[in-house]
Length: 113
Image (cartoon, rainbow, N blue to C red):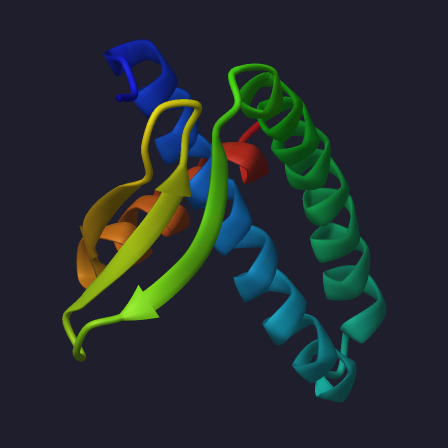
């Protein structure tokens, strides 16, 4: 069982993971823009900061014997995340639209730093 503090860290970890995946996916399309140098530098620095926090969260979760095992897409609206813990595995269900908006907020918060 994951306690509330660890669940909060886990949720942040999942959002950071999604932010990294989204930014990496968009990174390739930046080369097509007129001012690609500017945008590529912004995204590269953003990825660096997010990855740094991602690895901190991962180390914290590893010490607590918590790991994300896999994502399972349920339908177009929901995904399950299988979590391995020291006790038993857990499945957390996420609404994709909510997670997407939270990842966007996370990225915007990194940009405003």
